[in-house]
Length: 311
Image (cartoon, rainbow, N blue to C red; front, side, top):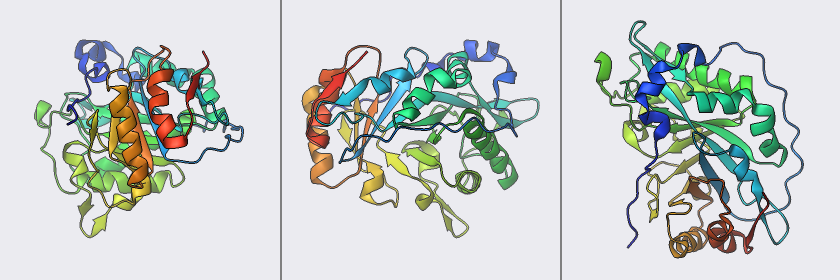
């Protein structure tokens, strides 16, 4: 029996006093010119599930994702790197949600040439996670289609401005109802995802399968399930198939926290991923230490090779 472990270190969302002190000017600049498109080197051949690494950028560097390769063939151990995390905040004066970056996320974005491009040049996709921030604003309570579309534009403009590969939705810590905000409604997330997909048809949209938004994927005859590229289990050290109508190739029922989930569980979940035909394997909290033993625990099962750490 696996131990149920929820995400522990949500410092991007929990440091409310620090967030409040940051200028609202850290919100996305709309209409920005696109960042120069990176020219990735052809990724070395690797067969097997897509591997994902969330990085808490308050404490760790995104570049850590690119330091692991497969001993057999030299391919990347990780395929997708997730910047954790931007926030959906609430402006109590304008009474609207806005996209917010704390100083650490902003630093990564401002230094995309040294923090993001090196990963993309290795063939690793870089996605920005967006998370609630205790202020009442969330993906599931936009009061109108227009409001949802406006927030979708902030996200897609950010992807364009900083040359990112997509957006990850994590509907936690919104605390719906705070600051006089509404409770989750049926149409909000459908409108949001529909608008975001229309804005960035070639980019990644992923779902951290938790919160009110994750259970509100259909409204008014529109089901947005197929608009997601990936969906994954949010409980580390466990196996839980995301309840979304996507093919197995786009789901990660396995979720592990690197350095905290035991290597035997990491390996067991990876074996099950392969044996049951799922196409994604989720990891969280990759830090700057040499975690090659933890990474190898799943790469051996997914790709038939140990992982090598190159600082």
